[in-house]
Image 1 (cartoon, one colour):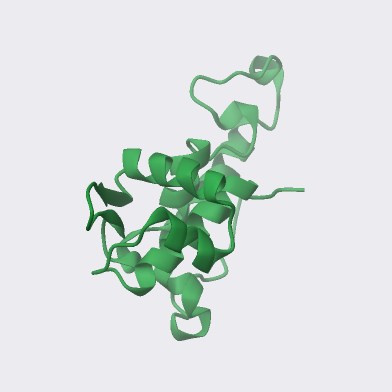
Image 2 (cartoon, helix red, strand yellow):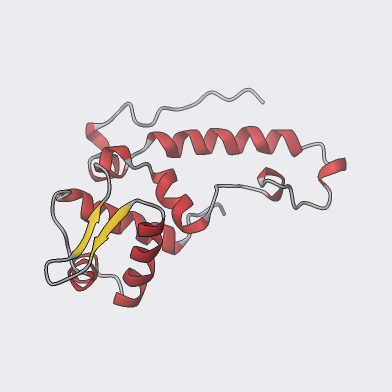
Length: 147
């Protein structure tokens, strides 16, 4: 089964929460409380999202965390890549390719095409789109694939 990892999913939850009020800063405790995520997980993900320039942090008594860009400018692919690295469906899609049978595999090029299509769709869906999928019908379209 193809599945987004739990931490990447939680990163999207955090970005969605911060994106609802992009001009405000929130403490780690507030984010954990409102997202129902464990504080340790929120701490880890905020560090990762900060390093990936998806959130900004400010220290001090009036500090906190804030989304770095408008939520409509942050794609689901950005969030997944921040936590899991580049999206690769199979070993032959990674660079460099780590698959031992790649030189003799007939499917090598086909997986690259599928990987590209999945990444293209995830790049079209923003964190803002996830909050109101019915309001953004153009965000995701069915793709006709000719491999």
